[in-house]
Length: 171
Ligand SMILES: [Zn+2]
Image 1: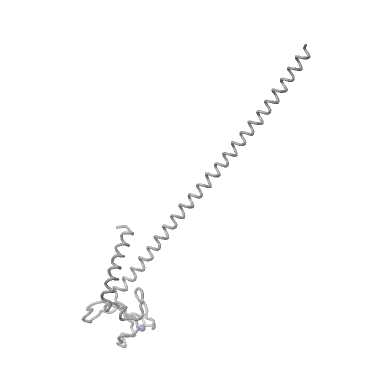
Image 2: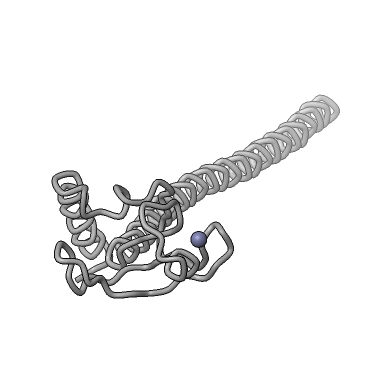
């Protein structure tokens, strides 16, 4: 199972859980707690630590939950102190991880695309430079051959003049 498939599986679990939550919202901790806490709570907003307990209610027997220690001590109910089902907290953590993984994958993809664009640009610049150098060399060669041709022409002309002059002198 690759990471992409793993993420898809986790996503389907999260989606199933979301639809379950809307059909039976009374069993969700959102319904009981006005302060929605994402993930596993470490400490309540009141400053007290969090306890992990097991429900003894008839509607949620043996279901594990997190609860503010102060609320447990005072035996509070319908209060704003933290209450959260353990499996909901774990799913929150997974959701956060999935979101982070997706963001990382997108970032990696962007980096990959950027690298490809950069490589294409460097390649084009290199080709342009090589072409320029080649063109320069060809121009130099052409001008060199031109000047050599001129030199040859001068030598030939002087030679002819000398021959003509000499033939005149001989006659
Ligand atoms: Zn509290």
